[in-house]
Length: 116
Image 1 (tube, one colour):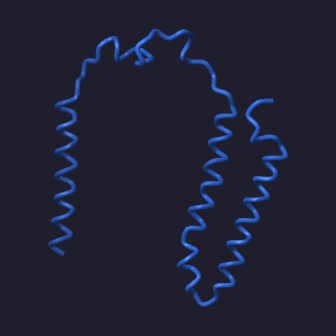
Image 2 (cartoon, rainbow, N blue to C red; image 1 turned 120 degrees about the vertical axis):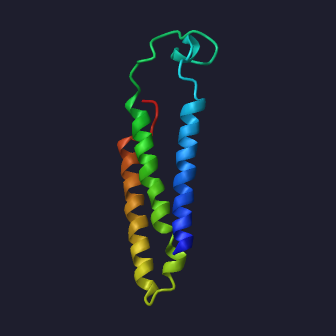
């Protein structure tokens, strides 16, 4: 019990010390260069508030959706040690089939094509 209390106290102390150190050392009055919209060495050519294409968001959502497949299939090697590994294989196959059908649907709808 003493070890847990010591670790909690140490974590809180270290967190508070680093937060206070950050506020103490941080530069509170940035210059005009830091307040400019671009810090790449040249003046911006157009407005920084132009709307993004919806394709960027679509690709990001599709990436997250199909990347989630890896997180769901990652524990499969340990799941095969259960009493009925056939059930695990069936559920994994259903998940892969469902995601493959979703990918085919997106492909047919043209959601993966960048230029029209």
